[in-house]
Image (cartoon, rainbow, N blue to C red):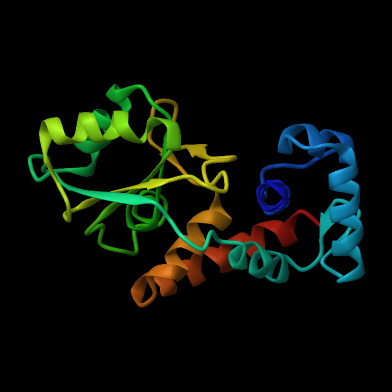
Length: 206
């Protein structure tokens, strides 16, 4: 739980569209106590990462975020080839009526369009994993394939973003970059591009 709280705080500090007015407000949005935020900010200040609630070294902050990954990740893979576009798959996932967030190739393709989306990775809640399994096996086969459902164990869906008024949900930017780094190769290149853009946006806030 401690790692989850810390990741939430970092995800918010690395959100260029979020400007906390106080440590109390940041704690409320992160779902933790003000003492947690005070302790975290004080630690980051000693490392020269932040000054108050202003991020001074966003790359270093991201590196800390990136290293805080679960040792094991629960996932299931499915084969669903009846959809000729990602938009139709998005419509299907939205009809399920359950919380989700795209990451890796699909999320990157939605916002940057650098990578070919050869596999769809989606975070879901642990308590809803069996519901997803039931729905996906109705329209596809289980084991291997082009869709991977991943269980959110460290609140990877926290501060997720919706693209457009009724568009798909994707993970927060540091989470997306971190997941792309784990894929390596071209995905790492795409992650570098996204990180560079994120750093510029955060620096523009100063």
